[in-house]
Amino acid sequence: MTVLDFARLIRANLKYLLIGLLLGALLGLGYSMMQPRVYSSSASGYVTIGGSTGIGDVISGSTAAKDKAGSYLSLVTSGPVADEIVAKNPQLGLTKEQVMGSLSAKLEGDSALMRVTAKADSPEKAQALANSSLESTAKVVNDLEGSTAVRVVPLDDAPLPGAPSSPSFKKNIALGALAGLVLTFAIIFLRRQLDVKVRTRDDVTKATEVGVLGTLPETEMLDEKNLLQNQDDHVSQEAVRQIRTNLRFVNVDNPPKSIIVTSSDPGEGKSTVSASLARSLAESGQPTIIIDADLRRPTVAKKFGLDSKIGLTQVLAGQVELSEAVRQYEGSQLFILPAGRIPPNPSELLGSDKMRQLIKELSQEFMVIVDVPPVLPVTDASLLSTAVDGVVLVATVGKTHKEHLTEASNMLNKVAAPLIGTVINRTPLKGLGSSYYGFGYGGSYGGYSSYYGSDESKSGKGHNKKGLGSRRAKRSK
Figure: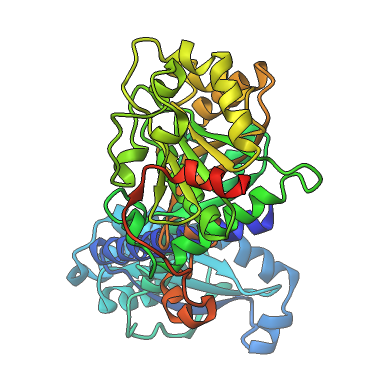
């Protein structure tokens, strides 16, 4: 993963990262509030030997005093000292073991100065324990030494704590926030690694080993109900135009004149891509014909509001002439050849020489878009793929399985199909994953209507059943 990919991942999951950060901070706060309050107070004293009483002697002091001070550190937390503290402070209500666990001691630098720290559940107990510890340690030392030559002299009395030393709210909240952020990152990366469905351009490119011709946004304006009334949807229109442009530049010297549009599995929007692309090509002034070769579940005629009883199957069977089956859409440069009656043998019809000859004949005059069934369930797409100049494979974000897309690509490669690119369908306009496809600012497209310009004007209404024949008659003149 590159730095750019990582940045995109953060941007795509920013909401979840912020939620993880907030939850971690709240858990840190909750943990702090559940912990008992502990107060800490410290007192200091110095060890003297013989008649030495000055503070200068303590700091620079004799080696003997330093050695004695170091050996007395362990006495501070010993049982005898704890017994002395309990005896002198019965009001604290502490046991010997509690006192021993509450005290700690250390030397201040290279000196005979000792600092004792006491911790308790109240400020008064912490102060009393710290002050009593030095006095009790001095008594135990004198008893052990058998004389008063060695003394532990108190220097600073322990102050009364104004606030608890623990728990540390700031520290726990910061650690909780960091833990929440790290855990969220781990979940995101784990989900990314275990995700079997297409999410990004890289997923599609790695699965098919071909480039991406374009992406179509997830919008209601491209569904069957609104497909033909999306003139004001500049995001969708510009996305389709990009596919149209890239398709023309796939092979500059020999641009494809006939392509099939398919997918790995059903329900991935191949027919929507076929219809949108055919319509865009026709609007650019290029004569285009879309053939509904999905003879199992034909949908193209329905998308354009046509009667599909007469179409491709009758033409291939020789029952009707091609000019009688083709419809011209609203007087435009778009022509439609519906599927016709569903036959019992779709694969044989699509793999026939007549079908190949039909595509070859139409491609001399039109840009031919052929909508075929998905690759994996049936062999129709593989049979017809060698009869066209190119194959476009459609993948849907969050639905298409990477493994299925790879298998579909492999099946097409086995028959030497000219797979020229892929189209990513239903990419999010905003939110999770939008930054991967360039639609992260989709909401602002509406403000650029004047920049995109007005849509191509539509002329005429109704469907011309004789459209193809009329066009050929004009060409013959």
